[in-house]
Image (cartoon, rainbow, N blue to C red; front, side, top):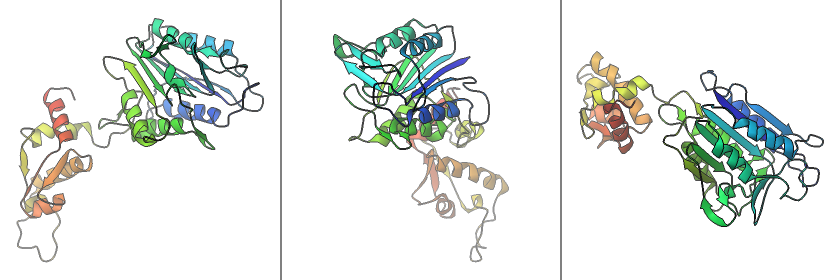
Length: 325
């Protein structure tokens, strides 16, 4: 069982209104509901929004919804919030529609406490609001975070930064959705909190708002899966084609099925070899293999060169060899 609470607040009674948080919440919910192959993921995410100009979502309701999310023993309890954030000397706050001064919002210490005490196997908190990087910090120990086992926190900005919003929504959430749609997938199609952070971190650059990632997990659980760029069967065949991580696979013209009019003197294509060659080419496409002393695999075959595993290829070779893939 996977539970998700997704909140987007545009309308504020006393604070300045926002324009993209509701849109962001629906975008996140839409991509999380199902995996790319159509299989269920977060089947019934609770989506709560306060659209401008009259929608409301009070602090009391927000607190109750977060407490309910972390109740029970789901595989994953995921909380996403887009709206105003606030920080003062006592800590950070998530601002609901009825927040008047910032510090009367939902304290992040409350959110973290609910998550800490939860029996969910994995607790994931994603915050697209200003100053969200303070999550997990104690007021008297600023800069030192406490994250319980099984918990991951991903925020749009540091404790001292604002979270940027454009006409189409939050900059952070736009990258988050891109990551969930497949930009952060590994070679088996899994999208984890770690790979999502890596995608957002690289995309924002050093001069923009900086995302914050805090985690205390034994292993990353996928938040969504997509169609992998290469089949698992082909990945598992790495140890068949490459006898060792440093093995160089010898090539010759019999691996290339195509011939031009001036190449009839070359050895005829070998059906067994031409069946393997597309697999090797697929390895090249996903940076598992590279041709040796040749610009492309075609040149390597025609020039009787070879191909070898890249560093990434050696990593996956070892996973296959250990039975981990």
